[in-house]
Amino acid sequence: MTRLFLFFPRSMRRGWSRVLGAFGGVALALLLAPTAIAAPLYPVPDPDPFYAAPADLGAHGPGDVLEVRALPPVPLFPGATATLVKFRSTDSHGAPIAATTTVVTPLFHQPDAPLLSYQHFINSLGTECAVSHKLYSGDLNLSASVGMLNAVLQQGWSIAMPDHLGPQFAFGAARLGGQIVLDGIRAVKRIPELAVQNSPVTLAGYSGGGLATAWAAALQPSYASELQLAGAAIGGAPMNLVEMAQALGFAPHPAFGLAMAAAIGLEREYPDQLQTGSVLNERGLDLRGAMANSCTNDILAVGANGSAGDYVTTTSWVDSRVARSVVEENSLELYPGVPAIPMFEWHSPADPLVPIDAINATNRHWCNAGVRLQTMEVPAPEHLSAAVMGAPEVLAWLEGRVRGEPAPATC
Image (cartoon, rainbow, N blue to C red; front, side):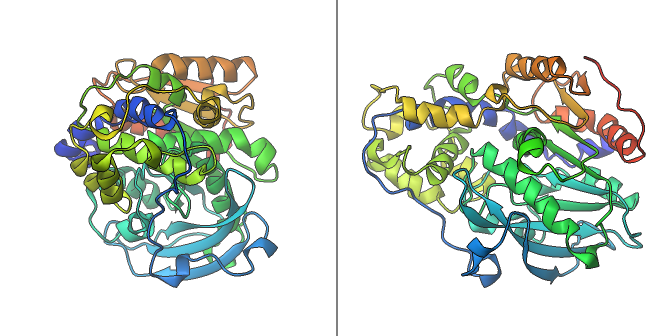
């Protein structure tokens, strides 16, 4: 466990210990402000044409493979090969989109060995923040998960890492993330060269990646009923964005940048319901422009110690029912559907960032609905270290699912 924890740099642990709390209040405050017509600020398209949607996108179904590219060897994963897959998915309004996932295949991979869909906490706004780019940049945030992923690769498993924020990098649109995760699995299993057509499939993710994982598990019965999934492990997931918002005021915050990014991201996915530009002052518009194409570390830096009051024209918020419904739509606690697969959920009861009541309420809902759910509390003093403390149990649980062992439950 100590070895795994070293993959979380101390500076990143400090910054992320405040991230999710800032996300809720500031993002919702901006989104529930008086609205007027104002265009969302979308990211600059990736200059690589591989990431662009094809002209015939609408002729394809969810999970259809659009293009495949072999990537160079990844220094983070010695001996493994990497493949970039573009596939057709669906946005929050039912329209077709092109999405991507990066597949890492271990040395001496055996056909139909297990496949793990791992949802990284991307938390960014720019196209250059795609996992397939960050694998080669030495990005500190991605290195946080390298220890666990290498342990999986050493067991012969393949790993798929989807860009679950979608082509517009709509940070905060968690339900969208679940759909992209499921379509990414569909696509990977349709590529013969990857040799995972009949592989048992598990999912895992922590924090924002845990939320995308949880949404994928909950949506699978209705969105991808044909997919056979062995189980999903989620940790430190913010199950109710509304509760997070209500728990936070408007004081300056070290991670204000990510809160602002969430408002920008949700506006991108719901442009007809949400407009942040209409309530931002000149400083706010400048900040919005400065982070519109940024990755996590730069977003944190440019927005450090900001507050909503610094960047808006008024603090007299009008509670827009339309805008609030968007936040509720992306709050998993409020979703009536439940996973049809075994689930593992872990968190720290002392986590100061994620509302524990929302996690517990979601767990109760799933248990009452008959979900085979195992829960675990870890004695972590803050948010990010709980990911590492739970990793050994998570790996053991995932291994049990691919071996076909009966799933334990704490319901």
